[in-house]
Amino acid sequence: MTQTPISLAHAHGQGAGLGFMMVSLLSMQVGNSFAQELTQAMATPIGAVWVRMAFSGVILLAMAGVRWVARQVLAARKADGTGERTATSSPLPRDRKAWIFAIAYGAALISMNSMFYEAIARIPVGIVITIEFLGPLTVAILGSRHVQDFIWVVLAGLGVVILGLTPTRLTLAGVLFALAAAVCWASYILLGWRVARHWQGVGVLTGTCISATVVLMPLFLIGGNQHSFTAPTVWLGLLVALTCTVLPYSLELMALKRLPAALFAIIESLAPAVGALAAWWILHQTLHYGDWIAIGCVVAASVGASLTAARKPAKQTG
Image 1 (cartoon, rainbow, N blue to C red):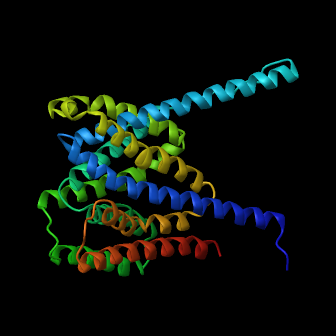
Image 2: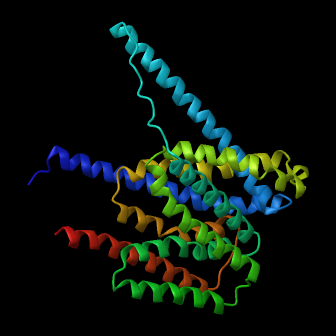
Image 3: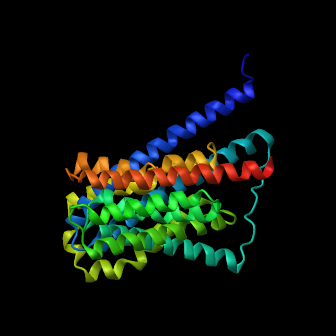
């Protein structure tokens, strides 16, 4: 039986979405290893966050400018063909709640990055990503509320216990910063879908990066990071901005339009393992076999929670 054009187009769309998501995942996790190098090069971890946000804001602003020019050129060409310029639709008015959500979303993103960079300055990147991933895992489990979710809670908890028992050297501050990043990530997810109702994702991300550059500037200067702002850190900061912010977020937005939420979440669940492998390859950070078992537990729990959450709506609508 031959596939219809619609089914073929859907398959190609999902294939493209999978490609976008995999590149996004690899970019983000490889970038996290370079982010630790940037953290070590700067005087303080907040200095590394500022460099990433500043470069990300500049790049995203430049991209917005290019898109605006392209729209103007396109509108002018249409006007030449029809004799009159096409009216552009003005954005819908945004109420106070929309602004509050946007500000809270930006604060969650800035806090998440700050806590993450503080954590990777103290403990291995793969372990930080694993602990941080408890945030979206908790959101997935709470959103599903299925009996089977108890299994995923136990599995994730087992992973955390194993992390505490392995001989890999951890610091209390590093673990607490990673847990704080997990809370911020959960808040970021919960606020994200509300923000998407009123704002374009790239626009909010651009505004957040610019706001973070301004808000974190005093901490950047107080920490003496201006003395670490040399040519090597500039290039490293540009690399981190591209791999950790501009490329992955842009690709995720394209992937979300083509993939079911469950499939998106499953691919995202691979982040701890990919991050640990990237740190092993780039930073030569070796983990104990128990750490890999713990990472596997968290990844399996996240995949299971995503599948359970995906099956629940199907049963409700069936």
